[in-house]
Image (cartoon, rainbow, N blue to C red; front, side, top):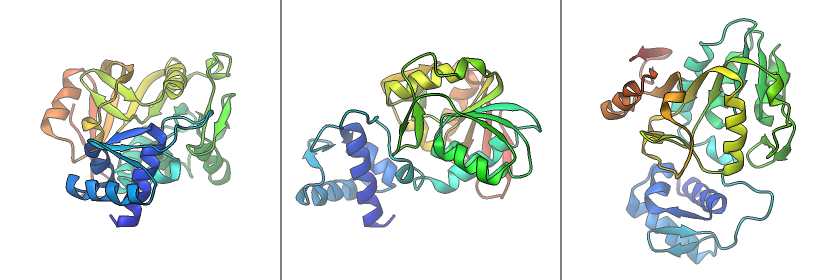
Length: 267
């Protein structure tokens, strides 16, 4: 990854989360920890971030109305190939006329490219997903009530009366910031509230997570791993992480990046 792109991601992460560790930033930028420390030092000299022990800190706290999540345009540049392969396998689970929920995210967004020839009823809290489906598919699209968070392209509300309870779906497709034996993790309480309401309206939960998410801890747990029915990841997943998913009784699908369209049903 080019230095300019690494710097853009580091600044976005730090601004969204107030503080980030060297290890976390190195993973997101696919760089070594030594390179990441040099990047932080360079950005600190330019007054873009504050250099702190073990990482970087935002110079100012996020203003009211922002959430602790990467901007959509920044996040979509990370693990693009893996996200595309995972989304393709997820789209194959959708049948003509079905009602589904697609939670906003850069991996779930990749699903929309495979819906041109199918009619679905789709509830989504993603402005980006809704716009694409309206313009490039024959799907019926529904949106919940709430405020639009422009950077992330999400529609979120802290209130129960957002219309979600009036929709019922066979499956919900959702990404996550992290996945571990403790459960499915996110970074922002408002996102968690929205996702939990959406999850209640689906018979099955399908998680779309690239293999790096198995090493991305978070203190905010949405639900136990057992709540998911299917986890779709890429072939970079380790045997240990695959075993964790199987031990939870969850079906694991592995998208093979080396073979176009290949998938391995592990469970």
